[in-house]
Image (cartoon, rainbow, N blue to C red):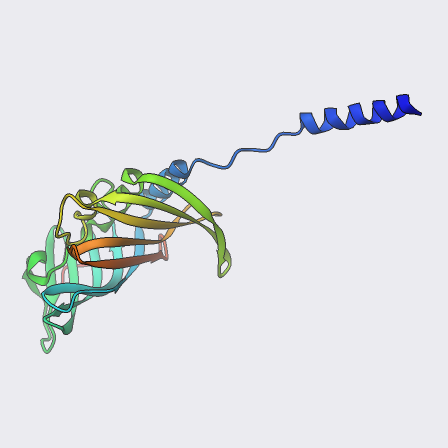
Length: 226
C-alpha cells in the first residue's frame, strides 16, 4: 500500500512539475503594442476632459474630435480665460489650423498658441503625438484588469517627463515629472484611455487631463474649410 501511495505522489509531483504557467506580459511590451496599434490607425476619435484647473490665466478645459492621418483634425475645444470659457470649433489640415470663434460663422486661419492649445493634427504623429507617450513612460507597472462595458482593460501606471507631455499639452515647468495612467484593451491591444496629473499650470495646483480614444479606423473626411 505504501508503495502505491509513494508511486501516486511521484506521479502527481511529476505532473505538477511538468505544468508551466506563462509569465504575465511585460507592462512596457503592453504599451509598445498599444503604440503600434495607434500608429497603424488611419483615424481615431479623441475626447479630452480636465480636473482641478486653476481659476486664472488661459487654460484648456476640454475638447474632442477626429484625428486623421497624415496630419488632419476636426473638432472643438473649450478654453477658459480668467474663468470665462468659450467653445471654439477647429479644423487642422496641411499644417494650418482654422478656428471658428463664438458668434462667428466662418473659419479663419490662426496659430494654436493664440487659442492656448496645441495643433491637434499632431495627435496621431508617431514621434510627437500621443503614441510617443507610451514608449517614453518610465516606472511602468500594471495594477490589474477591470471590465469596461464589453471590454477588459488593463491599467498601467507610469511617470512621464514634462518635456514629453509638452508636445501636446501646456506645461509650466519643463523639468517636472507627471503621473500617468494608461488603460489598454486586452483583446485588441488598443489604448482606450490615458490620464496625466501634475503641474501643468503651476506647482501648487496639480491638474489632471484625461483623454478617451475610440472609433479606431472609422471613415472620416476632413477638408480645408471654405
